[in-house]
Amino acid sequence: MQRDLRNGYELDDDPGRIDRDAVHRYLSEESYWAEGRPRETQDALVDSAARVVGLYRDGHQVGFSRAVSDGHVVSYLADVYVLAEHRGHGLGVELVRFSVDEGPLAGTKWILHTHDAHGLYRKVGFVDPGPTTLERPRPDLAT
Image (cartoon, rainbow, N blue to C red; front, top):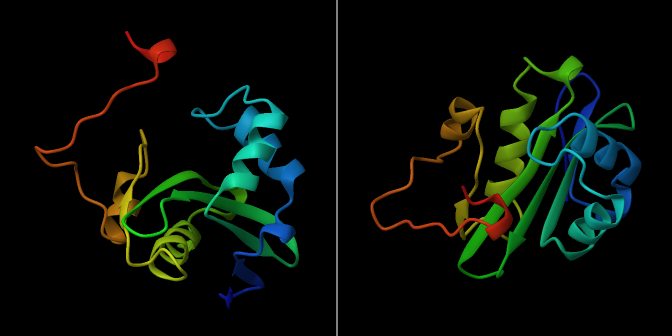
C-alpha cells in the first residue's frame, strides 16, 4: 500500500523496499531507544514485523515505523523516526497515521512507549494509559 504526500514524499508499506542499512544506522546510532542495537537484531525485527512503513523522498528513505501485532486485537508501534532534516513538515504525523489508521491493523488497539513526541501521537488518537494498564519491564532494564 502506498500513499503520495507532497513535495516528493511518499509512504509505502512494502517490506522489500525498506533500506535496512539506513534504518539500522539511524536506530543504532541516533535513536535513544535502540542505541547499539545489533544489525542482526534489527533485521530480525523487520523480518518478523506485522507491518513496516517507510517514508521516502525522491526514492530515498527518510523515515520508518514498525508494528508488532497479533493481527486481530492489539498492535504495538515501534521504531518510529523521521530524519532531522525532514522534520517540521507534518511528516511524522502522516507516517504514524498511515501506520496505524490505514492497512490491515487499523482496527486493532495500539500501544507504544516513548519519552518524546507525545503531542504528535495524541494527534492520531494515542492517550495516556488508564488504570488497567500494567507493564513488566525487561529484567535487564529493571531498576
